[in-house]
View 1 (cartoon, rainbow, N blue to C red):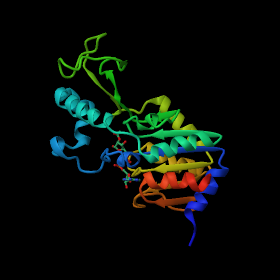
View 2: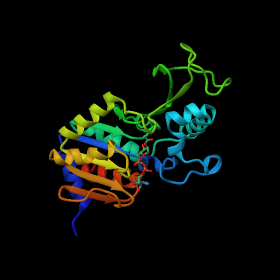
View 3: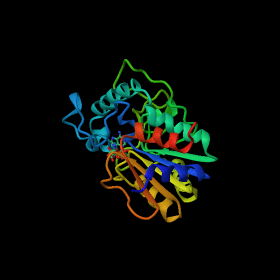
View 4: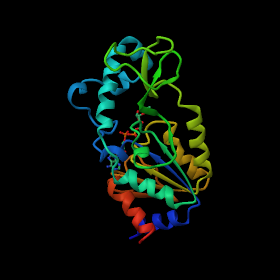
Length: 247
Ligand code: OAD
């Protein structure tokens, strides 16, 4: 039987530029439900793909603001898990490292990752719907959604909604990393949403090896130079670090 962990560890030890793409699975063990898990409680009957659009916000701004406010409160109560910490550790050990995330929870930064390319924004930030400018402080007690202190427009979370373009700088940084890395780690993502889902392919086509960490290999890329480490990220990624750099 092939020792996939040993193989992945060897690739990581030798790599000059490691690019990582993370998805909701990396935060699952922090207590944040993945996107495609059923939501529970108050919001169980709402489909996120129907609330997370500019049209939904314009139609029902208070409902969408409240939905995000509840998610923000739940997320800020969560802490990074061993997978986030292990990725921060890899960053400190390899010559060049780019961490690209689809997550909006800010947990990579909380774990000490120095540079994080946020493809889908960050729920902890708020911006003006009209001016598309981040606002540092807003009135949490008054009108919902609160108003922009500069122009009076409605405030919204600084996350990418369905039908919106990804932040261009982040996307360019992600593409550049995929094209120039020699090892691409894909951790806890279902590969269902482009353009993020195309990054491992892009890296693979450019000659990189790809290591996938997921609890299932369903929907994951398969083939030559693609290695799958099955299991929860909070166990698998720290295990990979230990196998790569045994103390
Ligand atoms: P998904 O919810 O689509 O997928 C989560 C992935 O994590 C699945 O492949 C699970 O098998 C895997 N998983 C679950 N628990 C895990 C664990 N403990 N360890 C490792 N893997 C685990 O989330 P994303 O792929 O992040 O976009 O979804 C991508 C995008 O779809 C989101 O960013 C969001 C959504 O539409 C926007 O909001 C723009």
